[in-house]
Image (cartoon, rainbow, N blue to C red; front, side):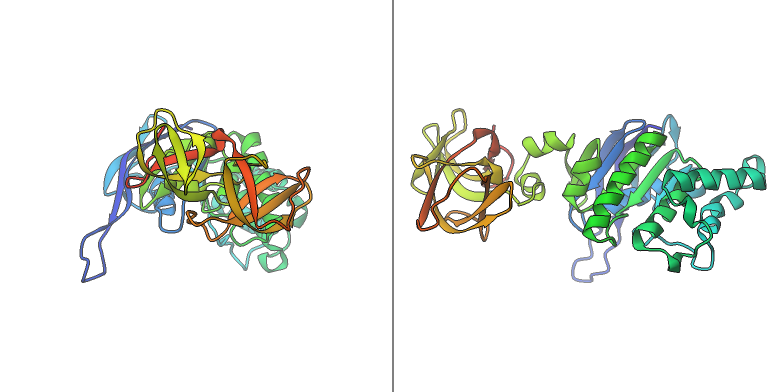
Length: 363
């Protein structure tokens, strides 16, 4: 099911008497979610991603704009008539019901022509349970399940009606790191098997980049960039997107462009043909540094962290806005830790130049 958002806006009245203007949670959001794709709404807390999900589900009414499922305008349609499946961050399972009872609950509330026989409901519940691999836990109650198992029950309950659109609101936040990795892979597998259009809300950029077909990066209710995860990572439109994506985070320096060269401090670190002269932000991905005794860029060496396949070089520079500079290099390199400084070259594809005032990318 294709989902189309047109000029979607949501304002909330302010409760702050000193600042009585409305709070804009979602601001003029235009986006088409293709049929059968998994889309990630990504951004820091308070950016408007959960509000956007609530607007799509019908739990919130937009101040302005329209929502289409296929060719149908569902803007004013109540949630129960939209054909959605919704999975909450806190699972929201019924503690007095078994796994079977929780999965069956949405089917038992169907009315009219949609009402199903008991036999059909049982078959649908078992199918959904098998899809998320909990069919051996049907008689247990939520208190007898692990966090990951409870999350699978919530997903099965959302899938049992085979919704047109599946909405996931930070479904992995309450899981430990290993279980989070396993469950996100399961979500991707389930989405591929069912072909249901899925919208996944998260503040964890690693989650979004690993399983989503496209990501929508948001801040303060505004969409900053939409694209395939790798494309957004490789070509951020502005400094916020560059800083938000990437682990370890990108290293941001105050620099300047002069006569076709990028300078950080007194060193010309890279050619910058075509970029206007002036003060800029230079942002360098951790993997963009290449140790080179004759390299143009020098850093104050702090320490080395060995990570097996890679080495993390921790350094400092007076022009860097990060507390520490982190450079990720291959373990094949040997860094002399007795030195106070380490010299390096830069991979031009991993260096981005931004306007120092607007923070927009300068190409």
